[in-house]
Every structure is written in structure tokens, then in C-alpha cells.
Length: 315
Image 1 (cartoon, rainbow, N blue to C red):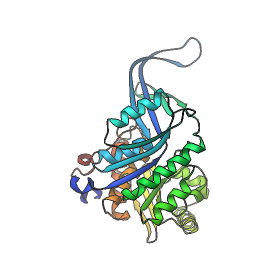
Image 2: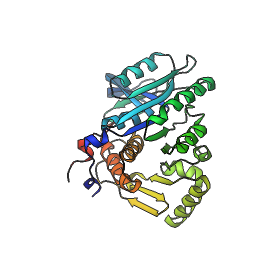
Image 3: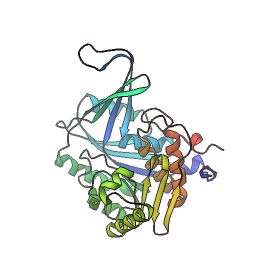
């Protein structure tokens, strides 16, 4: 069983992970749906409750501190209402935040409208940060990464990781483990990373559609060799996850449970993986625990986290 390997809270408290990437604010509007609009064939949602949560890279960092480890967060956001709200929410956690601000940047907000326990609509507010500000964040990165055991890049494609090539090289040259949650089809920018964690659709953008497991294996290992990744962890939803490394492959089946919401599940998986590696586990020891964490979080609604007691519960 994946949960037979247990790390004490004291051991996890010493683990230090630096999260770099795109932080967002997740907003939820809950309401009653009683009728269809006379203006168009769409439901009318009468809002009864609102909620705000930290998302994307901030959610990754939140998952790490919820497990009991130490997390620093380096990100870029605007100087708007959403950014100040995001900062307030992060300040309520144990995350050590290092935010760059740009008045020209619109802080990314994902607004989800929920009715009858279902997501009816998602509205995104965003734009790209200025390159000058990103350059200044690189200088902050240089002061932060030596203080951590693992560096985790959470790439949501919002422009906050324009200098990731140099940052990956710096962290790897310093002997740190570097994890990347990738975005887009250009994996060259992640060259030399220790582990990347694409899902099926993300990996398909890079290596193309595979015909069977043998074809997948050949394509992944070819890419690993070309880009010098130590390992690739493919998350496969209901099929669990597969680790491709120098030893071959390790497949971990999905934890059987009712899936309520997959929002943020990838954040939980890579956050747990990074935490376990920072605490001294090997990659092959950490993967089943990360898989278990992902199985727990999809049973919760919205961007959610997993704590130590849930992750290492007996049975």
C-alpha cells in the first residue's frame, strides 16, 4: 500500500521547497438555479454565497505548507484589487511570499459560477507581465534558491516564467532537485530539469499521439535523453500515473474513490512529490504518496489541499 511509508511531521517540517510560477486568485460564486433566462437559453443563477481561494502556483505552495513543510513562493502579479486580495489570503497561510508587482499587469482571476453542485461557467481575467519585472524576479530567485532543498516551477503559461531556462540551470548547477509542471509544446525551455509532470493531453502536444504503451515508452525515453530530464511523471487521471526514469517505468494505479472535482489535482500531485523529495525520499518512494494525495484531493470541491493526517491515514 502507498501509505505504508510514513514520514513524521517533524521530518516534513524540515523540508524546504521554493515554488516559482504564476499565482492566481480563484473565485467561486454559488447560487440557486430555478429558471431559464427569457433573454437567451441559459440558466439564471441567483448568487447566494461567494468564496475565494488561492490558485495555481500559490495553491501548489499552499499544498506544501498544509502537509507541514516549508514553502516559499516567488511570483509576479498586478497592483489591483485581486492582487491585494490574493496577498491577504496568502498571508493567512505559512507560505513565505515574494511577490513582484506591475501596475500594467492584470492579476489572473478565475471566476467559477456554481449551480446545483455543478460548474456552469468559468470567466478568466488576465494579461502578460512586463519583461522588465520578470528580470527583477530572476535576481530575487538567485537569493532564494540556495535556501531550499527543491525548486518547483509551476508553469501556467501566463508569462511569469520567461527566464525559466536560466533559473533551471542555476538550481541544477547548485545540486538542487528541480521539478516542473509544464505548459505548452516547448519543453526545450525545461532542459536539464530533474522531473517534469505533464498530464496526457500536455504530453501529447509534445510527443504526438501514441499508439500503445510500447510506443509511449519509446517516445518518452527518447525525449528524456534529448532534453536530459532525469525522469518524467505522466499523470493519467483514472489510470493513475506512470514514472519514466533510468530504471524503466513505474506505474501506480489510481486510488479508487468517487471523483468530485479534478480542479487543482495536478497542483497537489507535484506539491506532494516535491515535499517528499525535500524530506529525503527517493523519487520512486515519493510517487505512490503523490498519487495517493491526488486521489484524496479529487474527492474535494475546487482547489483543495491534503494534510498529513489524511495522506498517512492507516488503511
